[in-house]
Image (cartoon, rainbow, N blue to C red):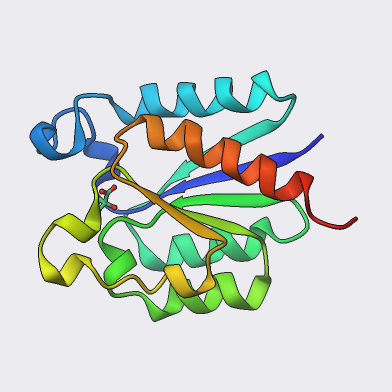
Length: 148
Ligand code: DQA
């Protein structure tokens, strides 16, 4: 069974109450349920993990190798700062879809830079909570067309 890891970074545990005008009112628990359902519809299993700590996210990416077929990652603010997360994705080679609830390119200039983008399969942003479903579908479609 295809397995997808959904990794959420710092402050995303606050979804629902955190700047709802930007991030919407869907909680992280609701997003994780959406992810489970999006996987189940396609017969894939989804594991969700959230951490506020850069090192824990790096370790989760390491641990995903050989266990999960793809990663959907919202690295939160680490997107714009973390060479460590970029290196972890590059070094372990698990196909990774970068995801953001907001359209980072339409926001402050410091959010336009992503360290994840150069090592990701692609980026989905600006679709709110529905982006997680889109990212899981994109990951599954990508895996489907990969030569076996
Ligand atoms: C975010 C965008 C980031 O710039 C921000 O730091 C976040 C959330 C998003 O999902 O839109 O924490 O990744």
